[in-house]
Amino acid sequence: MKEIHLVSFVFLILIFSGTSLAFSENMSINIDNSFYKKSDIISVWGLAPDVSQNLVFITIKNPSGEIVWTEKILVDEEGNFSTLVIAGMNGWLTSGTYEILLESGEVIDIATFFYDSGSQVNPPSVVEEFYISQEDLIITFAICIIVVVGIFVYLARNIILRKKTKYDELDLDSKKNRDYEKYHSEWTEEEIFGSRKESTINQKAFNEMSKNKTLPNYYDVLGVEQSASPEQIKQQFRLLAKEWHPDRRKDSSEEKMAEINQAYEVLSNQKLREEYDKYYKLL
View (cartoon, rainbow, N blue to C red):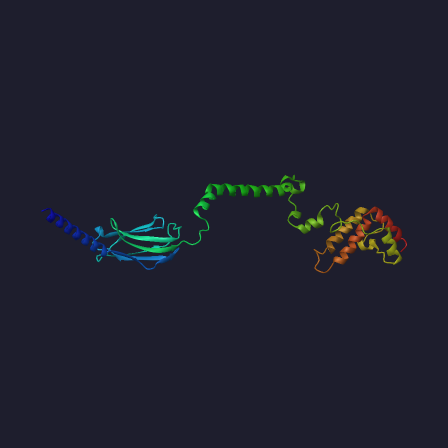
């Protein structure tokens, strides 16, 4: 009797095993390649008839067994399913053999492929160690602005701290027209146009020009009498400068202006004028 029960039990086990094996054989998962790189498209399809609620789950695990992708897929009336997966999505950082599993309550079928993650320029440990938060970036940017403003204020300190003069307070045409200012300003140290340099005219020069009979008549150059006062000489020079300055004339007037400058340089200097007059009388 015991032998009959044992035979029946073994027969039932074989029946259920065969049913389970047939069920498993009817389900499969496939992929279109065995090697993928980052951003490659993995095409996944398969057959899964008679699953509960017509749903299956696709799960991808990395070489360490960690889940890097999972998706729920509907199965059609004939038991077919398909989907597309982008390799490398959600940070597949490890190269190696990956598993793609078909599940419906339990693992039904498995496919494998090799994934190349490429060179990791900034692995997670390095990125986390030197990561700069948004707050740190804002603080750094604010400090840079403060430094730039500080440098600008330092360089412009003389302009910022300069006290206003009466000239600054008045509404003068000279502020609108640089030529007007040039010809109407109260000249002090730079009476001659251009930077005033040490005089190149001296007694020796007068002596040489007198011998060579090349000593100019500076009074004629400025158009004044020999007895003209310093103020008259200055006034006449200003008039000639306005007339002959290169900025005011289209024709070439540099030579004439140089002659006027030299005449004024001599006649506006009391010592030079006295020396010049000594040689001028010998003309």
